[in-house]
Amino acid sequence: MPVEREKLVELYRTMLKIRLFEERVAEIYWEGKSPVFNIAADPIPGEMHLYIGEEAVATGVCAHLRPDDMVAGTHRSHGHYIAKGGDLKKLMAELFGKKTGLCQGKGGHMHLFDAGLHFGCGGIIGAGIPHAVGAALAFKMQGKDNVAVSFIGDGAANIGAFHESLNLAAIWKLPVVIVVEDNLYAISVPKSKSTAVKSNAERAAAYGIPGVLVDGMDVMAVYEAAGEAIARARRGEGPSLIECLCYRYRGHFEGDPQLYKPEGEEEEWRKKDPIPNFRAKLIREGILTEEEANKIQEEVAALVAEAEKFARESPWPEPEEALKHVFL
Image (cartoon, rainbow, N blue to C red; front, side, top):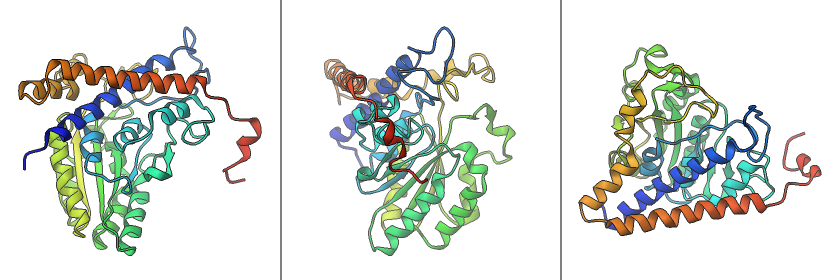
């Protein structure tokens, strides 16, 4: 079925929003951390894991979700949150540790939480899978047609919770979709050295559910695969597994020298960059003009600049707030 122009433009705008937001975060992150790297230095303290290069995955999947559907992200989840429709100002303020952030500055970039958007993520590898399965069970028991999605890296497909969750979701036909983002590396370990399975999508057969491998650098390929899986879940036909082959341009974390990447590998993957390629496709097919594409870029850049200004001007939390909203 043809995709409407508005949806195609939305896909482009969302990928661009993720890219420009993260490129600016990468610049801000190093403001206080050079020439001597101090991980605690402001304006963005702590570790930083960026999603740059993988934008087509979150965008293609979340384009099918409603605000009341649930998403469990990873430690690299700015893109998942933005694609789900997240608030850029609150997101940036959270990275800065400010009171106006999503978690009042207590979570940082790996622990984003937005109850209104049914979104959460965390730093423990694969921990979001059982959370998504639990949410899917709740949706089913409540008689709702909502869907839960868990994004994970390929390394998370080797942990016990992955297999236990898929087994339970398959038995109970729960409305959950597991999206494996295979960016070639689990930190620095290539998939070929962590599993004998060529594609994690093949593992779906062991649980009697559909599994597909798609080009994660092609937003339309992801969009089509996710559309089928999410529609299947809404119909009550159970879980699906989607593996998206993609690439992260940055290191596992900011400061990672990436010595494990073969020479020339990144250059080859940049030829598949989902954003300029999709922009060119939209212009070639008459969906956008050059002027319209440029205007979208300007609008998105302005949103990112507003988010940064909001975060810089926001107040710090009061010291006594450290003991609120936490378990003691």
